[in-house]
Length: 409
Image 1 (cartoon, rainbow, N blue to C red):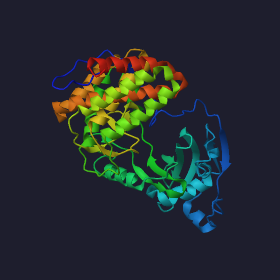
Image 2: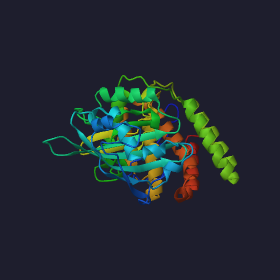
Image 3: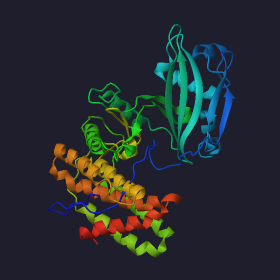
Image 4: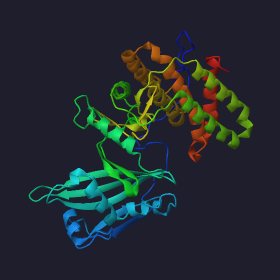
């Protein structure tokens, strides 16, 4: 882990313990299916009727879906009272009726569309759900083509401003043919009735599974270049995020930990106060478009192509937030995976140096500060999952050690 700098001089990297990088496709830490615990096959409408209110003539225009579709729902999401529309999202006839008019590539004349499967990939109860729709597309005289579409449903509903910013980003040199090999998945449309945004599923392995490998340093440098491209694009973000927002979020999370661990409340108060003083010492930010949830699982690597995924929180913010957040996650991952916060130090250094060389030395204190704030946030995250609760005390020790070296506690 790299410590934040004290005003006026650079600090040395601390002996923190980073977390392991996993090969999982996730936006944040959420429920992951361990097995396909709920699998069913459901009939899909033929041209004569769709079961979702479409008449026969419109059903014919939609094509002939497969007679039965495989539905995999390990979480039982259709029973979520906060998101009752998820039941419709798992009904093949209803889904096909929504996909065809909303996704341009499904509107080719004479195209026969077969919805082969619906699979719930991730789920956070009462908040959000990620569903994959696999289709087979057939045109006369041509071989069939497979397409996988990801649908993200949220209890709050679709942020149309966020979706438009995402679409603008894809159109500004981030498509799948970008010459610099930095891309974002193609946005495909919105299904308002299902409160769902659609995007094309892209290939690749999560950076978390590659950074610890023999090419980890080079991959870290590629990731730095990729997020720098994001920071330099002229796209208006739908929201702003400040260091004040970051501290407010931290305060709320640490207060929750104090309720769970009252014996640690004084330590948590000291950490929180030190974080506030750290934030107050930072130079003014130069806000730009930021990912705002940038960490190793948000990067997929396919050969030389870098995919930046999960752009739901696009914001105008300090770009150091993205780099620091990524570094803080690497440190926590090393601690969790290898029980050694320094396990990925070389990769962390490579990412930081590559970014600083392009932007300037002045950003280094803010990068390291955001990395430490991210690590403090992981104290709270560790309490939310049974298999991570052993991390709470080591993370507190690590954060206190880092803040002590900065003479903030």
